[in-house]
Length: 210
Image (cartoon, rainbow, N blue to C red):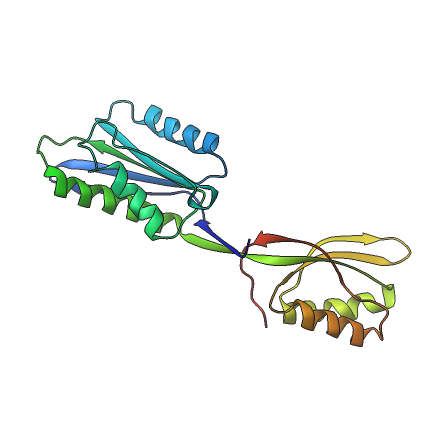
């Protein structure tokens, strides 16, 4: 669970190839059910289109699905899947709708058009790589609270929860590369009164370390 690369948001793009209109849609998805629902929503939206080609990848590439939806075998779904895989995406679904313009494109033309529409939709969505972070918990006194927080940006620390009781209990996340330095800094800054404890790990968007 070191990194996870997926789409940053939903994206869409349109291109016209010899009078055929290709509309690409890209969306981050967490489950196959969510991917299938996304595909069905596009098919419903473009029920009058000749083809609604799709592909999606989940579970670290262990699950891959695609459909040519009536286009010649290998000319549509596989090129869309290739776009997802070549960008190193996981948890990503792409649908490309085609409105036929009356001119046959041939297998090569279809591959280029579907690849281009899928690539443009992915580019519009953007790509983000989530990184593994360490979840920390630390108690500090009210007197130390402001001082320790002033150090957080330097180490890329983000606060997830703060509980005010007799002490201040902070739940935070730290990049793996700075966590040990952060622990030492907290110990030194508070003369050993507050030392962060690791309680888990998870994936989070990249953050800046000053």
